[in-house]
Length: 122
Image 1 (tube, rainbow, N blue to C red):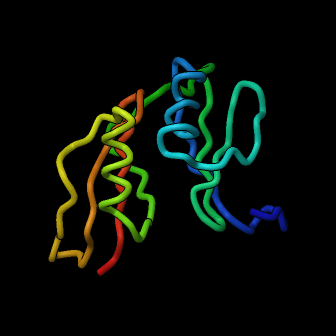
Image 2 (cartoon, one colour; image 1 turned 60 degrees about the vertical axis):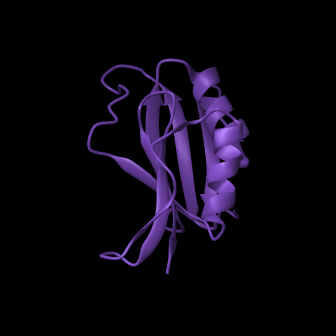
Image 3 (cartoon, rainbow, N blue to C red; image 1 turned 60 degrees about the horizontal axis):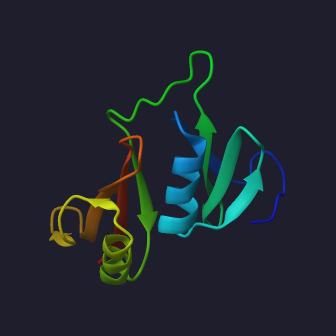
């Protein structure tokens, strides 16, 4: 991802108690490329203009996964499910077709309880 200015993309932030554990999940399990290591935070590239920032809890910024979800758009949903299963990720069932939304997806969870959906549009 090339930096082209402040309005060229987005970062979704998730907070964690253990940065190394979270970094292993986003970097090693999800295999997202590390875009920037800022010490107390790591930013991973999730797509062309989409980033996920993982940051240690501080001040009033706490891990609060309730009501949030990150969706990764990927063509090979079944392959992703197999890889994440082999890496011991916390999965919530097998991939399913959801007719109402015209998608095929499955859900997993990061070490702090944030829900990650791996999805493709049909």
